[in-house]
Length: 463
Figure 1 (cartoon, rainbow, N blue to C red):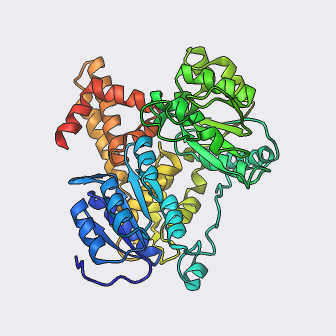
Figure 2: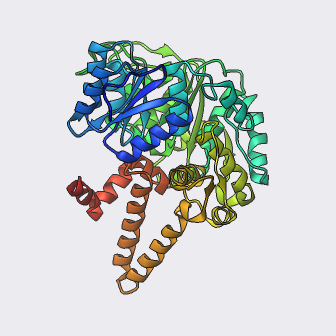
Figure 3: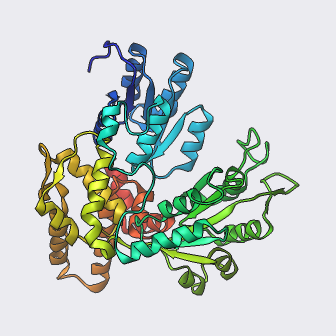
């Protein structure tokens, strides 16, 4: 790596100790026509920053010899004109908040969404939406510019018609569907096509917020309300004022927080932590979960009164298994977006057939991840069936089944659970929040199961 080379406009420094992440970000930047340098440690990053005038720095929060905040601090002191965005792991809201307070431009959560990454880069570098040049924009005109729900399957057509109706309403909406089926995208479309479209859309992953921080995150706090509260801060309700508050994985809310949320929705008023007065809030509530809220009510883990407040109108998002004929079209669209308007490899007939036969437990999110990996492995201008990595997964399942044949029932169940957790962790690059979503459990439930099965100790021993 040449740290002395001069940098032209549109150069980005990527700092991450994972080579796969550096390669993925570098490829994405290259497809956008943006050049990049990469560093695996804080010391490498500081050396590059000292030698080159970058236009943007993307840094992981966890580095072998320090953290992203140290990189952010160095840039703030020595190169304040360079915007810095941090990459947080394990859905850490606290890390993201700390980085933003320290002056970060923005943040991304692992596993990194390429759509969010490209939007961040365009914003930081003031790039046009579809790349740097008019030629590249012309190549991508067949890819929709805004968020869309693709598919001609009857269930998807029904969902789109329902979204159009819901956009004209102000009623609370509850979206159901498996993980990765597009629940947040549906919520964004309801917001974006409605009367609140010019106001904020604030998405909240209810399963990723530590229980002791929930009240302050949702309602805000006053200066001095607790240790570390150095200034007044608004919560999610205030941030979504006159807009839409999207409560993803709402079933993960603990019962005490459900009581507070119910009151805020009923009264349309919230009280910041440490405040003696309430303030009015005007937000539309859209919630979502992959679980059955009715069953959660019967099991006593979700309040019936809150359920009726949230589930005024229900929208169901179909799984990818229910729209197999649309998989080739959706795959082509995702490839086009991932290539950023550049040359796009075609899917071989074998690859298309394999995708149509696969069950996609992670739905569209899993399809996107599979295609990202295939792009990195594909040769020339075609993605072959082997590049998808689907056959390896089926072979692994057969091997596990054979190994379990001689075990007792409790041992079999534990091994199945263990294999499912390890597989989800591997697919999400060991992001435990993303793995929990893929498995259909809360982050806290995954952490408990990992402790019980000894997986946490095993992973910690390898790190």
